[in-house]
Image 1 (cartoon, rainbow, N blue to C red):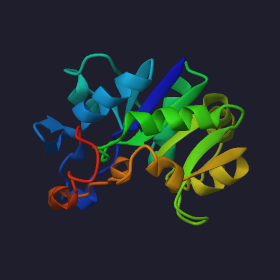
Image 2 (image 1 turned 60 degrees about the vertical axis):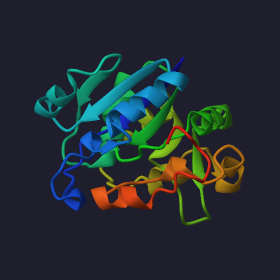
Image 3 (image 1 turned 90 degrees about the horizontal axis):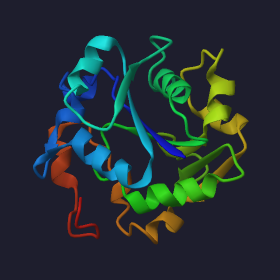
Image 4 (image 1 turned 90 degrees about the vertical axis):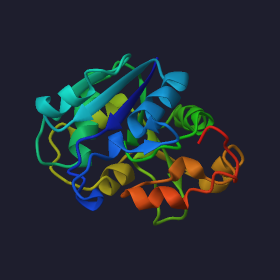
Amino acid sequence: MRSAIVLVGGAARRAGGREKYFFTFQGRTFIERLLETLQEVADEIVVVARDPDQCERFSHLDGIRCISDVRQGLGPIGGVHAGALAVHGEYVFVAACDMPCIHPGVVNLLFDAAVGYDAAIPCWNADMLEPLHAVYRTKALRDYLGEHDSLSLRPMIWSLKTRYVPVEKIREIDPGLLTFTNINKMEDLESIDLSSDRDSC
């Protein structure tokens, strides 16, 4: 069984307080695009919000569960922890909600690469990683995050048995690397080069 977590609990400061998951791109919201993609490659999807009130924002969406952070105030790592406790799959893909062009083929590649490891993390170089577009062994997340107070994902990645997946390998599936497109404000949508490769983005 393969699981997926979508983190939606951020305060959206760089988006002027607007909820990025409801930004619209090509007629669909970011969260709708993400869910459609992840339903192709995962058996369950869990959306992690900061509190029950935020969960209500997603009650209209089918095929997902929305849960709240278990340990408040830890940022993305708190969301990863809550999601890891909620999912049932041995491996889980973790995504941020502001990535509207995630490629299902890349997610499958990461799931395959993670077998036998605690994590499969895309990397541009030794210092530039994509921890919120990655696959983790669920038990490894639970073991590490259960009592950990760090707000950084990097120490966790370094402590796990991690397989680093070069972006050049990912480029074989997604030549323009649109899968890593991160949108912090609506103006960023204008920078997406739709002609590069993927018709569905």
